[in-house]
Length: 385
Image 1 (cartoon, rainbow, N blue to C red):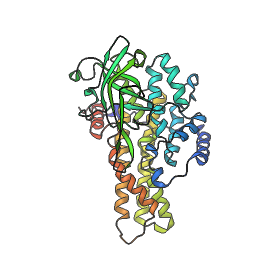
Image 2 (tube, one colour):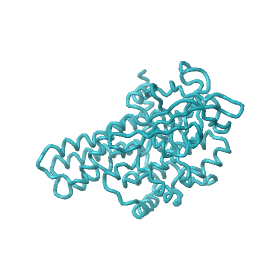
Image 3 (tube, rainbow, N blue to C red):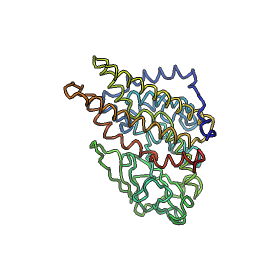
């Protein structure tokens, strides 16, 4: 048990990043579109290509990628600062989000030079938006049971199958999909590979899924005899599972797993300052702040491991699990607090933000791996199973 917990050694963001944080704040002050609180609360899902391209002109998309491919060649600490400021401001980051956080680093680590030279500059320019094709109907959270299959042909591969809950799949240019290239689902992790799929290819059908809020963030993607060239395979055939495990360390770490409800919390605190503070509410602010500070330090500790070139999969899963509970507690506790006095007049912007976050909060423990799957991973990391 101590082996895992020892990895959460207190780490600090380098002092040299203070000027970078100020620069980011100034940029967001002028580049952010005018948004109401409930729109800012959609930061994760705010698909705004123009904002992403303004960010790219600053050199802040593909921040950690090498300059050779158009990146800024900064480290994970710098990305922590950038993401923390964008989420705190409610920036619409969804368009470039996955390409910047996952797809670019994945291609850099496992891709061929041809793939790196083609895709990475486009990512850094915010001209190539990526989604992730992992989940499938009837597979639940068991990624090793995916049934979408790519069969080898003389020209490359022929892809058939379906993906679901693909974030912004109906708006992105490319998908990196985990598919089976050999064996059967009984073979579990063996025989899985990942491909870069141009979503404009014949045989690709995308259908948006409407969520509780009326938004269309997720999608279904169908592949019917989609012909993929040989150079769309990432890395070596059969290496897909190892790639996914490495990729999840990027997905589950960072401020994005702590700040999903931060706009709502900020809006509530601003409302309290207008004469609505009580001793009980001030105590709630203190508890939220203590939890946030602890989670932030844990996230920085994981980021420190990424900077060192490690792959802290279990540690990231632990942060994600604990942080998700924090993110979900914010709307639940604020609902109870603001509903306690039916005669109290609540600011309309605050209520709209609360309504949105309350409806989306159940997804926090689903995206990036369900709570049950993560806790199984953590138990193994602690030597409990």
